Length: 626
Image (tube, rainbow, N blue to C red; front, top):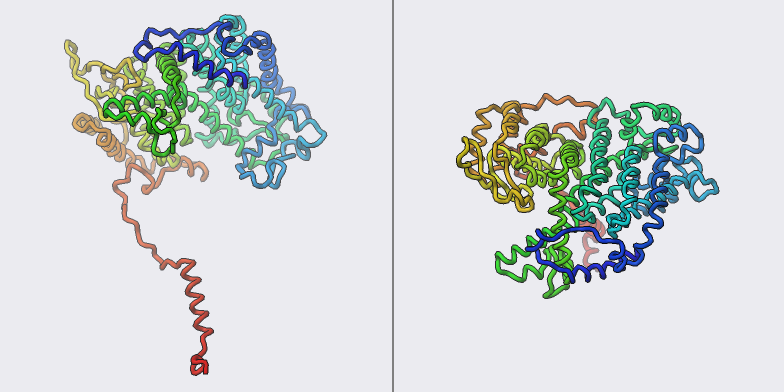
């Protein structure tokens, strides 16, 4: 890794020599480099063909330990079962302590809690097994990430080993615990998506990404089912030492994976119940958030690629306003000492090689976005299904990130009739439910959901295109000539989703039917709403119109909710009127007076001192000191 970091300046110089302006990007080919060419920048890449076979064998064997057949054997043994358990350090992270109490071995630490009475400082090796496996597994993932970052994975010389890597990952992904899969996505797939040359998407990216995304859709569904359905909440209980024999018997049945994913695959040994429950919750949420972050990175909504788009927008703003100082100033929230020199949109210094790097990244991000959502049908279906389902999971972080991904999906594929059912029915229905049912976990994200509703309705029904991210006014497209009524002309930016994308030229009736089927809403109300949306095309006006319509449906659905346990009500119970965005205009915005007189602590102390002084004062003639 140090050698790779040292080779980066040489790589920037290499790109600077081959620098091409953005105008020639369409004719530029993104092809892999042979190993001999990469060795000019980093001589240590020549070691990969020698130890990559051993690395793949190590990865295969270490992950096979978590296969159902092996787990059924290990869980029956009184000592070997702790190979599958979490480490004391992982248990400590779930307790969310501030670290001032001495860490794992300090007061309130978790040392000796997984293997009762023993920790890794003792001579007993059993508590050390989990930590060793973590280090071995994570080292393999990090080396795979380095293999992709150095672009050696795509060299023709290693093409004979690539099918073996695909076989191992496809086979072992269903066996992984949530914590294993999270690390695989962070340490390998994030780097793979950004490093793969565009010419190898079909041969190298699709075989690795497609089976993993299909599996993630199934895994997330089984992970969140017990949270969405109160009758299945017992399935989230992790495996304690006393449960190992029963779990071993389940490992040989078809019901294994549903229970395995519901508890995040965790074996917690002798850990206490509260910490074990927090662990399951942590890994459930971590996996969902990692998937959302990975998709954001791939679609240029986060990370280095998002910075490239921000730099382009900044340069465009400087040209339109004829203000060169825009290129040398960063955001107001960042203090910069790069006086007079060009800076990136985030305020960091911009070197000479940045333009060449940005040009290469811009070519790749456009190609990857199109490939993931248009060119590979199976992969695109898995991605859209995953994002739509994540909108319904009660985690605000995941939902908010997936809302941004929804806009990028609409910008890229809304014009394609093959996506109409998935976008106009599945995505639209989930988002409308989130707003109308007003669950407590959705408080604060209503505008994000209403913005998706607006984006879908404008593009699929009204023939209006929008700016990226569902921003800006609805730009009404004219009626198509030489066609039957109700058909629109396509937007000019249809082939450029990063500048707004296109619309569905033949409007869909699905979103209209969903709104008309809501309680208190009929066809006439929807028609009136559409007329208002066409008359008022600003983003604020259109979102206010949609909010007013959804408020009526929310009022009619009150009292129809079936609540379960009190904990379930805290998450899914309906938000009260003061919390709900739909009723924001109806609530009293005045701040009421405090019912009691406010006494400040300092004033109380001052008054007390004055009273004491008054009591100690001499009285009568004694006051004159006679």
